[in-house]
Image (cartoon, rainbow, N blue to C red; front, top):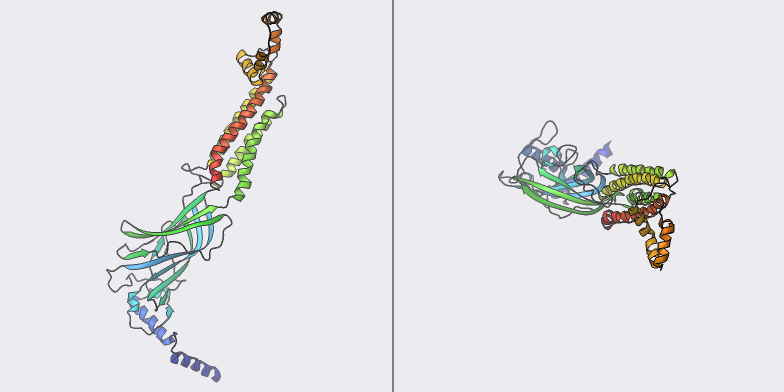
Length: 412
């Protein structure tokens, strides 16, 4: 027991006679007591003082805010929320404590949260409720070399963010965290942003979103100071291209090949309906990743809706095509439709190129040979229209794809 006591006395003596940047335990206790006398404490364990740390209460306290991001936890476009893990570093000058009676400290000291004044900074667009940034877990540090109070607060910020999904899945989102001093106006508290960007030195890469840009600014509105921390993130689109965009393109292309099936086949209408339902499923799947908003809709959704309408039209057209093919042979094809079919098949062009004398033509008309040679049947009409509609669909499909999906590709 005696050796232990002697060792403690020896260590305390070393601390007292040392002239380095450390300070004695007694001095630290005196400093703590002095700070408590200046500000007072609240029995509930929270900071209770409302007096700002300036000798003249009409002066403004400058609060320096710096944002550091560790990770992007989540961005939900459906609910319009973004969550990050990081820290907010606040520094200010405490004129009351630095002008107090204790001046022997040379380095720094960490004081309990409830013994001194700390700013009431809140996040305005917090979805979890308006609460003060920081708490008793994080203790302020007094730096006597710079005469500043440093308060580093670890935060999980979950704020609201209006998504822009126009170019989904190649979209880019811009979200802001807006802070203000809840109890004091701009004449009492001034929020100063010393850096133009966030501190990203410890940022952990996200697998869904890439961090593109961070900006900071401070502004005054209606007599109050605000600090705006903005982050720009871009979606990593490769997963969505393979699982959403590529199936949409393939299904849209396959939809038109229904015209290449034999008209007499019973599977034509069934194939068209299956394509229609598949597009509806893809549309519902895509909408699960997007917000329920009528202000901004994705170009991909517009494209899917048009493909759904086109697929429904194809079902109706195929029903009429089967009716045309199965028409009675006694039913006469209208002359306008006959000329249209002959123009498509170039029969008129071929006929006009043959040199036939007038006498032979009159005899041919009398015998009815001419009529037989140019007569078009309903099955022929159906087969020619199938080819024509197939090519027309491919052309329209290419035009719609170019118009809606090219802007998406340029955003990649």
